[in-house]
Length: 158
Image 1 (cartoon, rainbow, N blue to C red):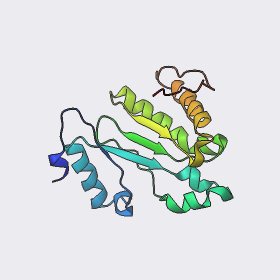
Image 2: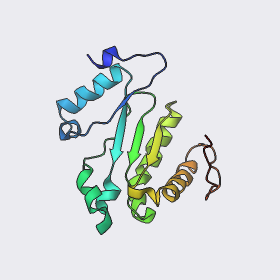
Image 3: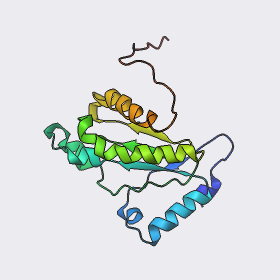
């Protein structure tokens, strides 16, 4: 009922499912995906495998807070959202993000417009990871260019 009442004209919506019932291949998973598809609500797909594969002591609290759920690569709308919480070292992350390259390329070729972002605790390595992932994806499908890194920081003037 909630999804039916959402405004449709200039808005897009996405839902991040975090309960294990939505990742076990049972009826709840299929029903949730069908409801989201019916209402063209995108799915936020969280992938924290890289984080959970890290044994960095400084990330212990973050690992405790982020669910360690299976990754289901599904689109329920035109703009699937992939949210990756990565391993601190991109080399340790490649095995987890490589399948996303193929999935995003497939979605793009099918006319979808996915959003992909990686964020990390304290985000010190996020820009380098994002550029490395962009290079991987650009080898598979046309995704445009990124500005040179490191980029000059922009200031917001009041």
